[in-house]
Image (cartoon, rainbow, N blue to C red; front, side):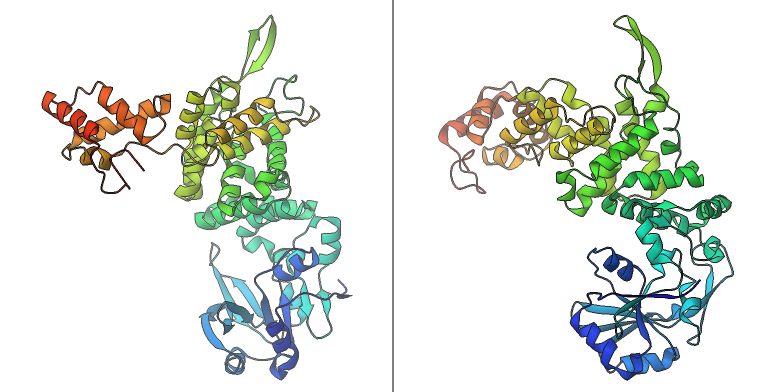
Length: 497
């Protein structure tokens, strides 16, 4: 392929641009990889990798030492980290040839070769869109493999036949397809299918990392799911694979089967303002929740006569879906933080169809913890919007749940116990199991709406049936409440904050 050069003024940190343009030893240095791709797509870039041609590793190391502190942790791959100031670290490397000598992502031997041409050096990269280079001196993008054409056409294409040597590249393809709205070429699809059996060679942590990038950054997540289906790699994620072909009632789901619906829902999530504005952990949790929200349907879907006509229904798919999240996340070695947030969202993703009393909302907020009603409403909204050609309308019940939870201050947090053990200790009770039993009863009463603050909690405590207390203990409790016993951690008498 002809090497193309396209004028482009890539935004680089000033000190890096000055170093690359002024240092004689870096006259054959190029910014490479994802930062060039992201700059071309007008995405913010943070990490800048530089490849230096024409000099051996030791010489580069000696020359870079004049410009800052060096860290050679990537020596086996020819990588040198240069820190010019706190917070400013750049990766420098020399061209290399990678030889596959064993299975797995780490089964490569890197042979440094500073004499490689630009075409040869960039050919080891996985996809053409990642094989771009930027020349900071001429201010041009150097494209040896058609990556710019592929980016313009939203095409995902492997760079060379060596693609098959690293199965992780398939998972990278999945998240790139979703992040940049790409469709893989038939040839790339075929290569991915040819190495489907090598999935087990990939460390589970690496698989998780690619899924998390998809969940946090995808602009069209369905492209990643479609890539998995086309390559056959969806078989490695059976909870997702089983959604394909699971039917839905055409009146409520004219878009197709559960897999098609899930893909539409993921795309809808990626467009919700609340998701776009959320922190990374919330984006990941909510995207995984909408991916998994119908995991239970393949095992619960059946035909049933309702209201005089045959319907396709999936009763109790929500709790089963929550259960199926566990093995899915275990195989990914998913973090506890994400797993614990996703499971309650899946279990309660139809809660807006139930009663919306204050009591119900308080209990729902408690059951969702550590997630929130705000996150649940994001999942509900994406679920409702993932049904084209039905009108893209979020149900009023979702808006009402969000409004009511905001009034109750339960939108972004669950209820915290008002009456705590320290309050009971201040009232004269001794430490022990009784403290826990009473605070549990108090929290139940709080969720029921019996009291809303410490003052009313004290009144409840004085009047409540507390069979775990002896008569003398109960009398002491009532007396101390009447006297306004001081809570050492509050600003006044026990029960007053």
